[in-house]
Length: 285
Image (cartoon, rainbow, N blue to C red; front, side, top):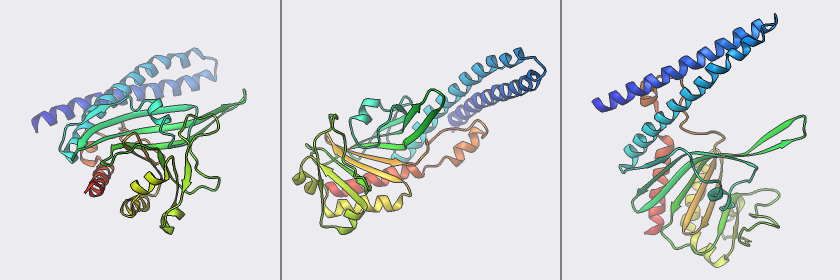
């Protein structure tokens, strides 16, 4: 307990430093902007120095916060050691899954790795955007932003399959010049499932082997529980789940004390992850 208090005090110190330099930067630019009207443009440049320091202080606080909070909160829920990689997934890992929309700008962070009841788990935040420029204007469209999870699967998966919510123009993965495995659309006996999802698989027989009525129900229940678009994929003995929440989770605020953050840390997403594993274990049995 004493060790935790010391860590929180250290984190609070980093937060206050980040907040101080952010405030200095804002005030400096505000004064510079007001004086610039009378010709003192050089005062605006003065704000660059605190802005650089502020950026470094914010980054340092965020890294230290995540290295402590993410590890401790996941370990508390799963009762097992976890590894935290703040750099996130590699772009190739996500791109080669052919699961979520593609773009020309990729971000990822907060990759958590652990093993629970024999299931290896990876979860990270992913943002994919398409940026277009006409020379005069630049437009940024966010194609996906949310959680991306990869689970080892109890059944052997030799083929490729994606499950996406029904779309008017279809959901066939890849394209004419893509290296994506060739797939065909698969229909199931469940009318409810077919209405909710499009399934494209490289092997129809394996699609029926993996998507048992029980597992289809798990997927439908998961979608009903979430108010966001979801994507599912089977490949390389892995089960991929992506949830387009529209935000990056676990981002700390320099405006809120670390002590408050510790007591208000939202474990809901972590428990949801644990619940999913429990469901997958049922499939193994």
